[in-house]
Length: 275
Image (cartoon, rainbow, N blue to C red; front, side, top):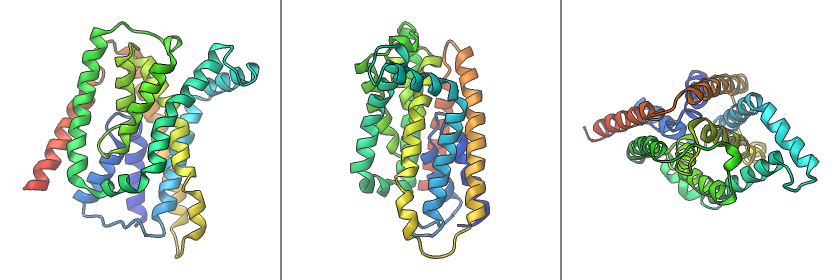
């Protein structure tokens, strides 16, 4: 993997991980359509992915550090229980993180088969676009709630929805925000829960691969890998800042532009594939 390719993919990761347009789907399309042959066996590949995930998770943690400070403070005050709102929300986030974590852990090898499949990424980008448009429809039909209205079944439902993001083309933030809208939350509340839930799941995705780093053979572009993590983190932070302000201001059809974009991109990739 060339350093300049790392930089491009780092920017894509930082933007598309938080925007509801699928970072994995974009990564598959960029690598395939550009003709980049980046084998997973390359010495650079694994540390590059680990650093990207850590960079993105760090950006989320930095942006939401006040939220996490309140949540952890609430857990400490409750002595591990659920006697205050902050502790309760913390355990709701834990419950929501379990489904995708378990599916990713036990079915990782089968899911990775899809990672280089342009057809799968293109089709599910279009599916993701339709899901986002349906999310706007659900928002119109349901009353809007804040995160204080989150319940255990609702958190588990959002967590199950997150598991679909393991498919290239399906956006983690997109499906979880839509799931939140479907349970009656407004855009801002659904996005906040989605991004808070993303922090541990993205960090875990990177840290689970860390032990494999000790078995890497061959030279790696260490400076480029570190720079890629920083780039991904900067763009992830900027994306979160933009999106939270966007969702706080939007009352209707906030997801439609992203949905139309995914439909157009997926359709263009299909045309290219079959041309």
